Image 1 (cartoon, rainbow, N blue to C red):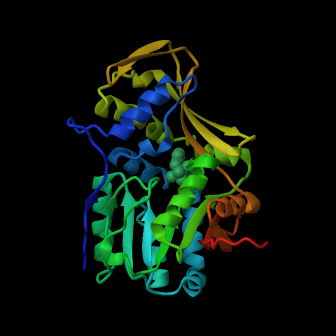
Image 2 (tube, rainbow, N blue to C red):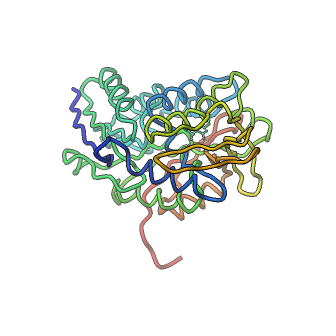
Length: 328
Ligand code: AVJ
């Protein structure tokens, strides 16, 4: 039963331009260190390229996380129980979601994603795999509170935020997002969240600068999207893909580095870049036990259980919505 309530919440102008995208790009290109939020990678092409990244030999997070879900299904089921509406923040993976749904006997599935076509495709595929499970895709930006379909109001929720996507946010934004998720999901919610772990720098940098150049294509696709959707003329071939470890903030940074002096326009505005100047396109924060727990607690989630893969490359954490209390 595919009860696919399709709610559109992306704000577009008369020409179909995503207003938030244009605002983020113009503000980001105007800043002294040019920077564009990583969530704009995921148009349909970007979502497909990311699926390709997950198959790369260097990119371990997806395999490690999938392994945990497979190996620990019984433990998940025991701690979560049946009948919850699984709310996935960012839909996509063809493998992880069915593993979770198989493990826990859910009451409904609600994928939330800004890439609408990709969302509808993957929801349809999932509906076929789980006949009888109500599926309610919601096209939305989950960094703001999302009103869930009315049919789900009485069901307890289980948030699912795999992939270490939380690592894309600086701590302040991550805390905001975790608190927003708690509001979207309600006071009796649980959350299963993936967090990638700090490890050997060479392993980390290889995962974001693969030999086949798929991550480079993923990074450059952001420029293609800007040119297409925001009437830009950025010379894409003039940019090199860079991935570097920032030890102070425990994160991999991706940049697009200008290899020549260039000038271009986007949405009617002019920009210039010097040789070696970069556009910072992504942070991917890595965690350990304590930094992960501190982040969750600051975001109003109380850690309940934590699992890692055999090589301790990746963690999956179960947390419950925190209850406000005064006493220690
Ligand atoms: C989807 C955010 C988990 O940070 O590892 C992969 C995105 N960027 N390769 C990550 C990504 C470059 C990915 N997340």
